[in-house]
Length: 226
Image 1 (cartoon, rainbow, N blue to C red):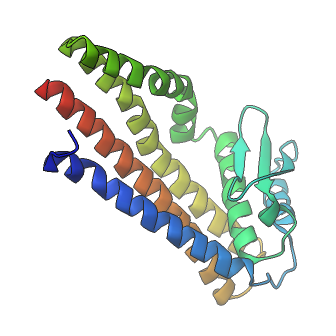
Image 2 (cartoon, one colour; image 1 turned 180 degrees about the horizontal axis):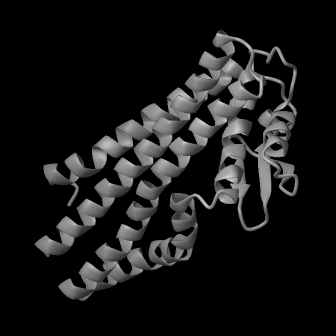
């Protein structure tokens, strides 16, 4: 299977872009984590300032362990920031915190792509678990219909990755808008730094979407050939 050049054409772009995206986001975060925010606000304070400005005082902000583990939990209305963001007054921390606050604002605004992504999470989890078992099972018993079912289940992950793109891009757009509009970022140099961090992060979502589509295409191809 791996000796087929077409297989590598499908999966290699996602692998290469994923490596590039990870190195870029790590470099951007590392660089701007060392640049202090002139306003002096920590990541948690930036997020709180943005949320309060939108009247979202019910959204809690909590620290979470891990690197780049920042996320917003819509089910519990909790914004969780990593240790490198929560209590750090840097440009990188401000950009990341504002981005996650953007997700909370999306939730409050009933942003359709985010609602759709949340709705398909159970399908994605079930598909991700069942797809390999179904596909390999079909392969072992030489059943093309079962292989097709497994391949189609892989499509749930691809759909999730595609829907994630507008959700993340919009959160970054909202982040930059509030950082500037609320006066959290005061200089053009700081704004450029925040943009660089968020643009670098955006590449990880693009890479994930390309990788998911490539993998799905590979399974569809294998099912068709079998």
